[in-house]
Image (cartoon, rainbow, N blue to C red; front, side, top):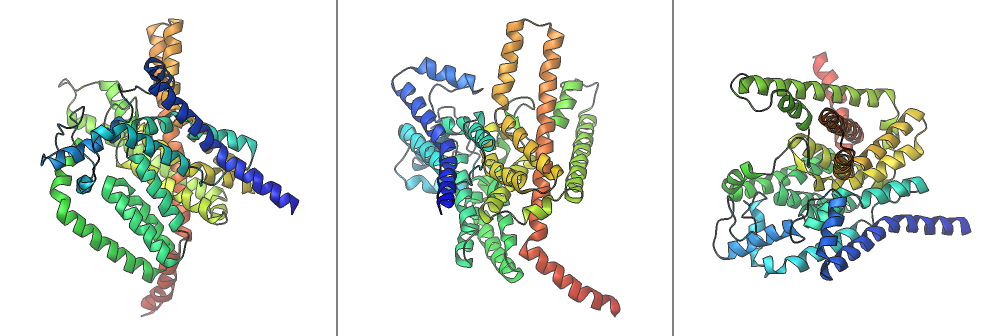
Length: 452
């Protein structure tokens, strides 16, 4: 009994410490800003690798500006004059339906601060580390550049994070509760599109429930598109994209970045169609390599077997994180703060590494967890490297090669951890109730068909 009590206390401490450290940092940042030490505030953010705006919570300010302009009858899809930067509104037009809420840009500070606090508190229920070195990794991830960036901007992705967390918890309940999980996932998708990947959780259901629920969700999606499709089409081209070398992660960064480094901007000597073909070829090679790595993981390790044995919440949140990150990675470019979803993945990786019976699976998951944390700090590391090179006054060629090597290592690291995530998702689907039901039906009826 005493051992169980000590274990419970240790688990509770390990579960609380990462978010507590982040909460202390958040309160310290708040105090520094409110006490008008804004130069210090900006300097600390730059140390994190974040380029600060002149005031915090910039992104939620843009979302609140949408409500301001919508109440005035102004179309904000292509340009929002109520926004401090005049940014087009490229999220779902469903957000505009919330304009009846009496909040606007004048409430930016209060809304941003409350969202940041709620996000930090929402991290506590995530599955805890079990060992000291795991705790160090979780603390580093929870207080990383990506997380601080998301909170400082109060980007709506932190709202999606909390909705994904809720969906994950609900997905472990009874059928009626699980149905709420799928509705939560669909609602999140209607706000920012990419959380549609969360509906992978539907594969945990029996085939009849899967089909009935899928049909109902498809109907709701059709109604949403019937109402908002014209605005979605107008806003889609304004979705953020940027440099292949800084601030964004995505599958196309490496292949298209290499093309850009090699040929630069097309000056007519190299046709754009040729560059596009080369970029697509490199993309295909990387995708094929990732698929081969995924296949090797599934056939040469016990990852699939171990995945089916880990506890419910750790497994569900691992799937939640993997499906969101993999979806964002291949769908296009994502600004760094979207990496907060890696926080869902880390506990599951550490659990698999802890319970793995073979050294290959154990080493793979530990290495993936470490690389994942490094990627969450990568902007800090990149800017730190650039600062060190500037201080050393190295030759331009060496400076260029060092930055290029860092970029290539970063992009290969993303491809490697995404390959592991895909292997995890394949393991989840292979063991899911829906896929097993389809396999049983196929075995039952296909032989009879052949016999005829």
